[in-house]
Structure formats: C-alpha cells, structure tokens
Amino acid sequence: MSITYRDDDEYEEYENAMREARNKVNLSSKLDALKKYQAKAFELRKKIGNFSITFFTLALMFAGFKDLLDIFSIELFSWLDWIIDLGFGAVLFFGCKGSVQQVKTIRMTSVGASIAEAIPIIGALPLWTVSVLLLYIKMGQKNRTAKLDLKKFEEQIAQLNNEIAQMQ
Image (cartoon, rainbow, N blue to C red; front, side, top):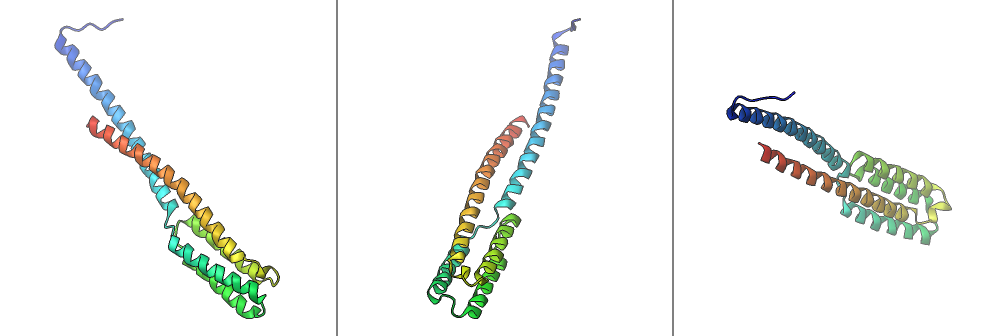
C-alpha cells in the first residue's frame, strides 16, 4: 500500500511534521540522558570531597615525631604515650573532612591505630606513620579515579548540551 499525495505542498507539510516529531523524540531522549549524567556527576563530586594535603602533611609530620618518640623512649612513660595516642587519634577522627566514605575510612584507621598503640610492645612500632601514609595513598587513589570518571561525565554533559542547543 502506498500513500499518494495530491500535490507537493501536502507532501512537504507531511515531511516537516515527521521531521519535527523525530526532533522532539530525539530532544527528549537527549534531555533525559543529560539529567542522568548530571546526577552521576553530582554524586561523584560528593564522593571526591575535600582531600586536604595540608591535613595529611601535618598528620604525617606529627605521626613521624610521635613514632620516633615511641622508638627511642621504648614507651617508658606509657601513660603519657597513651594520652598522646588518644589525642592524635581524636584529631584524625574529628579533624578529617571529605566524603562520607573517606571519613569512615580515616576514622576506622585512627581508632585501629589508637588501640594498637596502647599495646606495649606493638606501640613501639611506627604504626601512626604507616597508617597516615596508607590513608594518604588510599584517599589519593580513590580521588584520582573519581576525578577521571567525573571528567568523562563532564565531557559527555558538554557534548549533550551542544547537541541540545543545536536542536533548539
């Protein structure tokens, strides 16, 4: 079955109407995709959080100093050492800022290191320095991968915005 047209004007109107309908469907799907990409980019920005190099640098310096004291004093003044360990653990526990996942990781590490430092023989090991270094490496890796993913989403968002602008 074929459609016959009485004249070229009707055919042109039909083609224009079909083109407009296709553009509306295409525009709608692009807008939906744009909303999804923007939501994913927002979640990644929350995940990245604030990764403070200054905080980790100060924590590493203090941890190194504290562990040197532990090694050379062989924990002769364990009561003072425990107070310093708890204080440093509290600073790491409450002083960190970032995403929820980062804060959980830092808090679990600070609690674990505080408990391990309270054990007399294990307390002489450089646990604070190792834990702060591991936290720095782990947070850096998570942030780098999240930033790469965010960059890809931002490129896709920019491309969709350009396509949508051209369609309107």
